[in-house]
Each structure stands twice: as structure tokens, then as C-alpha cells.
Amino acid sequence: MKILLFTNLFGGAMKDRRPISLALAAGFLTLAIGAGFGFQRAAVGERPVETFFGQPAPGAEPVKFCPEILTAEKHPHGQMAFSPDGTGVFWSAMLQDGPEQTIYYSAFDGKAFSRPTVAPFAAAKGNGGPAFSADGKRLFFIRSFSEQFVGDQAHFYWVDASILDDLKRKAKDLKAGEIFTPKGRLVTEGRIFGVASHDFDKDGRPDIIVSDYLNPARILYNDAGLEFKNAVPVILTSETAKTGHGVALGDFNGDGRLDIFLVYNEYPSRLLFGDGKGGFTDSGRAIGTPDLSGTSVEIADVDRDGDLDVFVTYYQERARLYLNDGAGSLAVSDQTFFDGVAVGDLDGDGDADVVSRREGSPASVWLNEKGRFSLQERTIDVGEGIGRLVLIDMDADGDLDLFALGRTARSALWENDGRGSFGRLDQVFDSGTRMAVGAIDLDGKKDLVVGFAVWINTGGGLYEKAQTISLGPVSALELVDIDGDGDLDMLAAGLDRATGRADLLLFMNTLRKR
Image 1: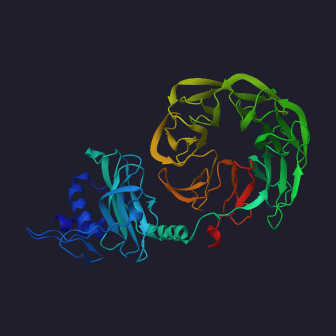
Image 2: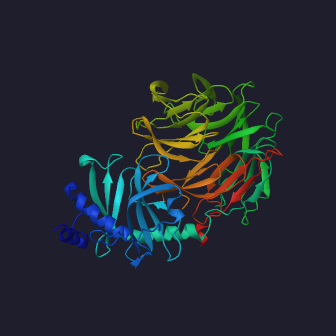
Image 3: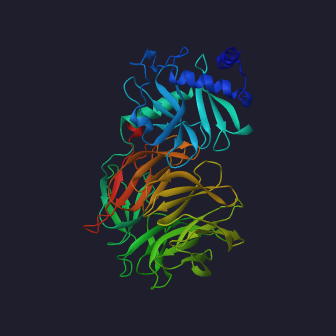
């Protein structure tokens, strides 16, 4: 009766997508394991013989069939299912760096398997038992809301098997080559520590502004051949000729035109007002004091008065907040923060909150209460060796999660519960000194570049490493569609310790051209 029951079930008797009762789990798993691994039923006293696509394996003992590419980074166990046409395989595995189970997919061309990716329908926790219906139109699986399949927390689900078409396309893209060209083309020389993009001359092509430690900050105008031969300094004074570190773009004086905020390592920051035609004038106001060495900048309307306020991070000093009067005059606030600062709405109330951290200490949460920040008792134990904090909505649930970018340690993601409390996820990433976020593989989900490693968002808050480019410590990083073809290209500078230079290079996204 169990076999007949599940045959009807897989044949499409279900008319909706409600979870199946957990009472059927034992029978379902028996069938899933038998079908997925291809074991023939053995008579009493006989040993089971493993089969692959219906062909008996040689010898009486089971033979290991799983290739290394499927097991190198995961811990497979228990359940495996080939697609009805034999072009792909789903299997359950534990994440390498934690106990949470999920479902992976790998394409198969008859000879080799593609690099595994997390199945897009699988959440980060408790997924297993993939099995196709008899007619091949549905893929069934189990989802548990705990790390183990226990009690009434596990349910059956199904997805339409047409999802295979998208998975095959992605596997083909990744197999065809790297996402970005492995060798970058030179944009400008220097020691670039800050980069941003905008169409300054309004010709329809994004231009580039760089903050350079060795040379004045300048705009690199994008010509039709992506040569960037026209480089125009935006400010020329003795104090701004060198030591540039950070750059931010925004309308600081409320005239509707784009302005530029520049951070310097040995001098006060500068604010430049734009004329809307690509020209900029120094506001004449030094932001900060000469004894402060700026490293980075974040902007947000902290007091919700309609203008942009500025956070500047300093070397071995507390970060400062500068409040804007609406006309571009920035006055230092009496509130300061620990070394690293990330700014965004953490608790969903619409205003800008702060996460900051002190070297070697847990990160702190500061919630905005009508323009004043209140330090919360809860902390985030990001661990040692963390260089920067970045806020991103990695799981598309509408709140900002925290990425702890490891300088000497592995990087990690912390999930926001929507109220500003964070829990660490088990997945870890490369260390790095810079990171960028954007939909790199054209599926709309936010992917990551961590250092020079490209991580593709496979859904459910999980990422797969797709590419690594070796260029040394990253000093500047930006994702922008520089050639207007609809995909994000990468601007990056890697520090050459032998020469002290970090030239800006352009890496083109190749997915549209395949």
C-alpha cells in the first residue's frame, strides 16, 4: 500500500503545494533513497549491488561512485536523485563549516559534473530527501525548520521540475568560463584607495572618480573605447595633492546637483560642490582636524531633515559624525563611534542606525532615536581579525544583514531578525580588505565580491564561490555597468607591496557575451 500510495502521489495526484503530512516521511524516505542511489533489492543473505544509470557495478561490494567535485566542500549523506533526463543530480549534504543541511545541484553532461550550487528552492536549514515524481514533472523534498529532522518541524514540499531549465543554464554559464575577464585592463595608475562612478558629463556612459594616495583626485571620463584618456583633477591644492583615501557622491547643498566628498589620510576631508556639468568647486571648508587620518566615509540623512550627513572613519581614532545644515556646511557632532562604521536601517523604523566595532572587540549596535544614537546592550561577537563591517540584505527579506569582512580572519554573514539583533550563519568566506555587492550573474540576487573572490548568491542566504582573481590586497572596489550592456563589470585596485602602487583595473563581465 505504501508503494501504491506514493506512486499516485508522485504521478501528480497532489493539486496544491501544501506540505504533506509528516506521518508519510518514513515511506517517502525509503523510496527516495532506493530510487536516488540505484540500489537493487537484495535477497536474504545477498549483498546489495550499487548501480549507476541501471548498469551493475562490478564485484559484490558497493563501489564508490561520487566524484570529487561533488564532495570536496560538502559532506554528502543519504539522499540523491538524478533528474529524469539524466542531465543533473540533486543530493543532500551538510555545509562544510556548520551542521545545517541543504540540497545541492550539479549538472551532468554524461562525462563530468559541474561545480555544485545550492538548489534555489532550498533554504539554509534542514532540506533533504530529493526525489522526482514518476512523470518527472515535480521534484519533492523535505524541509525542516530545525537543524535536524525532528518532531513536527519537518514537512514535504514540491517544486515544478521546469526549474531544471534555469539550473542547466547557470551551470553552462559557469562551466563556459569565468564571470569576469581574468586579466584586467589598466584604467589609471597610482595608489587608488577610493573609487566611485557616475555619468558626470551626461553622455550616457558612466565615468569614474578616484581618490589616490599618490596623486590628486580625478575624474576619468568614459569614451566609446573604454580608454579613459581624459583625466581631469577635481581639486588642486598642496593639501589635496596626495594621501587620498575615500570618496562619496551625493547632493550635499540641496541644489539638485551632484557633489563630491573626499577623505584624506593626513589632512582634513574636503567637500566639492558640483555645477551639474562636470565641474566642481572646493567649498573652502575643512572637515575634521589635521591630527585625524581619514580612511573611509559613509553618508546618510541621520536626523531626517532632508540633507546628507557624513560619517568619517579615522585611523586609530573614533569615527566622527558631521551634521549637515542643508547648505553643505558640516558641523561635528558630540557623538562618536568605534573604529569601523556601517550605516543603515537596522530595526525597520526608517531611519539610519549604526553598527560599529573596535579592533579585537565585539561590534556594537547604535539605534537612531530622532537623530541621537543609543548604544544597545546587545553586541555582535564578530571575532578577531575583522577589518570592515558592511550592511546588505543578503536574503531579500527586507532588512539589512551584516557582513563582517575579515582582514586576517575568514569573513562571515550575520542575519538580522528585522529588529536589529543578529545571528551568525555557518557559511564563511574569504578574507579581504574591500568588498562589493551587486547582481553579477544577472538573476537579480545580490552577489558578493570579497577581496578578489566572486561569490554567487544561490538563494536562501547561501553563496557559492565562482571565481578568484589574484592581484594582492584590494585597496578599491566598485561594481558598475561600464559598457552599458546590462551586466555589472568590476573596477578594482590591488596593492603591489614591492612598488607601493595600486593601479585601477577594469574587469569585464563576460556572461552577456556567451
